[in-house]
Length: 383
Ligand code: BJ8
Picture 1 (cartoon, rainbow, N blue to C red):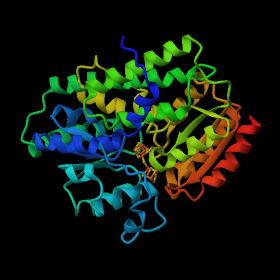
Picture 2 (picture 1 turned 90 degrees about the vertical axis):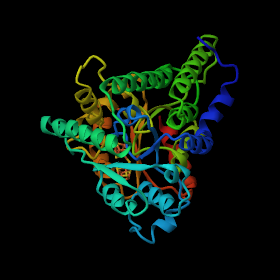
Picture 3 (picture 1 turned 120 degrees about the horizontal axis):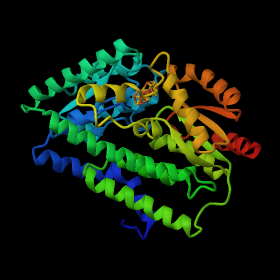
């Protein structure tokens, strides 16, 4: 297995990957391949991959275009929705610009209503995501995946074969497993490194379009960290924090930084930029590929599900496996579902897992960095 000499340079490369892929997506377009822009972890990427399309995440995570978005959308709306809409409206996001199709799902109310306006700029296809993981929910989601496959075949004038879907499943599983293996290095005590470095890879990998190359690179990073750890390269003991909640990335990396600048280490990410997207594999042995995809994707424990037992299951398991000393719940302002769920998560973390919990409500501005530092310093000190 390949070992990488200069880990910090690789982390920087992953950190810059989103920006560095602007040119890559342009080239993909010039070569005639379709680009599908998406907003959510529930999106079954394998279907688009089987159509020969490149999938790119469009969730924007900076406050640069929030002001422009607020001319159309209410101010009291989640910053992820405002930012994403703002980048589309101002044509400042190259990924949006080069997307042939935007796919959304009926997740939270704000997002699904925003998609109606996005349709004014680009073709938008909305998948009807059930809000529960019941048997009828699974049936609907499987039908929706098939409906989407048929739509893509017509839109891109292609045939999506089951063999191509199977190949995509195998490739995506390998990518998930590679990212999972890397993430689980943080289960070691003391931790091998800061969570902010692991996060750079988790986040940046989504913007690497050559999956094969990306998987090999992630595996090499994991091997290098393992080797270094065996040779005694690791952090001193620090209080171990697990982050849960809304998707992290861009501006909200300030939360990871505030924890680690004040003496903690973020050992795990129970959210869509982390374990929610990589924990469960698609069953490669199921001959019904649509069922296999429906089962895996609908299992994601997002707060738009009601009830949402899978978030508790994954969080509980991660607290144990990553030996977490405390949990920080990152909630974006005006995200009602995660905000309401905070009470249940706090009770679960405090009473069932017996460890401290802190909730942070934030947005994409940097205005609360000082306050975040003060709160984190006190929280970490207490552990
Ligand atoms: S599967 S977390 S990516 S919906 S933060 S826009 S929920 S108001 S991002 Fe998400 Fe899919 Fe769920 Fe993951 Fe709405 Fe909340 Fe904003 Fe959110």
